[in-house]
Length: 242
Image 1 (tube, rainbow, N blue to C red):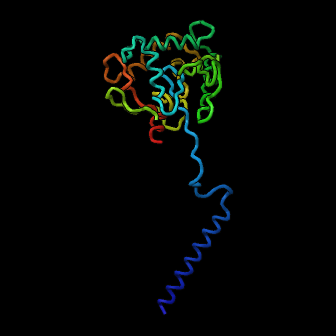
Image 2: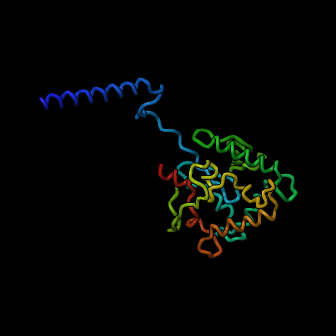
Image 3: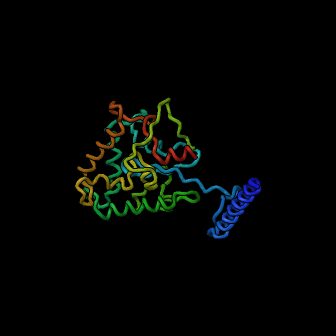
């Protein structure tokens, strides 16, 4: 008798679970359910690097991460090391590019134009065609620099036997494409130099920010940066996991 009661109870519970599952499937929103194993994977995100000064560099899948393009351009004497002087010179070059009215500071209009170009890049940075812009597709102007200021995997293994460290995260991963593509995880890398928060960046503020950025990266305090020991950006780390 007891065995029969237990069997009936078990059967009732099984039927209840089955009916609940069926109801859940019926009431589930259309298009939900387990992923289709035969569906094409989403297109990969175009490799993107945002330099410490906020300049954007687009790469290509299967080639070294575009951090190498920035480094090669800033390394003026091509000795595979960036001194503070070379680092600062690269920053002054980009500041001058952003300073379209040549008044020695970045005003609200210049900052807004730069940030708009970053938004366009972030929106178009996933698979397919590169974001359009001056100088041809992606605003590249025929080179690796994205040329955003003119708006006027992936080879991540350490070079030269060095070791890469994870980029410092002042904000959590997921804060945005631009933030995760730079060393310091800043969504507005140029405006971060605005120390007095007056919505403008003076040449003096830029020079002070240049020092902060260099010494944040020069962790061994030897007065130079090498590509092998620069941190890996969150975007680069995510690409390597994929």
